[in-house]
Amino acid sequence: MKKKNNGYNSEAELAKGAELTASSYDKTQGVDVTAAKVTVGGKAGVAEFTGTATGRDGAGIDGTMSLWLSIFRYTRPDGTVNHVAGWNIMLALKPGQTALDTAQAFESYINAGKRPYRAKASGDGDRAAVSITYKE
Image: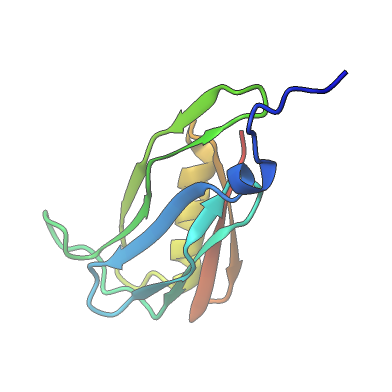
């Protein structure tokens, strides 16, 4: 007896995921995305922070850092489709905040959230990164 092929391609589905983008609105602390996709299959997205923050003084976008995980969908092996919402994470920076402080702040915020993502900070004061993985 032949098995029915439902057309499910595990390799293609596990490669799907959120696009990671980042923006710095701080004068002295920068961000660069070094791995731009967080996949269902476990590939981490990575944002790297550099420098010491000028920080936020009053209202507005100045002195903030933003990470964005895009919306995406993928098909599970049982044929159901999972729609994963996008997530815009914007944090206000403190004057003198190091790159590692910023990575750790994103790690704490992401891990405390109810979204299917987990984060891990690494590095030192001058250059640090946050790795984000998809965990359902």
